[in-house]
Image (cartoon, rainbow, N blue to C red; front, side):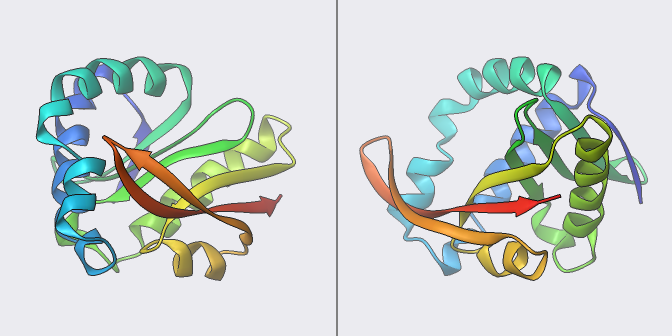
Length: 156
C-alpha cells in the first residue's frame, strides 16, 4: 500500500468508495433509510463538486494498492478530521490506521495540537483505540433523516 496526496483525478473513485462503503459496512449500525440519507446516489453530482473543492483545500491523502484507491482521509487547517473511509473490500487491513498515522504526523508538523472528528457509530471503537476521547453524542440530520454520531478529540 502507498499513501499520497489527493489529486483531482481521484475524486470519482473516492466518491464511489464512500457510497459503497457506507452502504455495506455501516449497515450494521444504521438503518437502510439512514445510510440512504447519509450517502444518497442523488447527491453524487454535488458531492463530486463539493468534495473536489474541500479535499483540494484540506490536507487530504489517498491510500492505494496497485491501481485501486483503498482509502482516503482529510483534515482541515483547523484540525477537523472531515473524512476517513476504507474500501468495503479492504476493511481490517490497517489502511485506516496508516492513513490516520499519516494525517496526525502531518498535523503535528503544521503545528496543530489536537484533531477532532464526528465519528460514526461504526468507527467509534476504532477512534477510541487510537486515543480519541468521546466529547459528546450528537444527532445530525441528513436529508431529513436523523443519524447519531460522536464528537471525538485527540490531543497530539
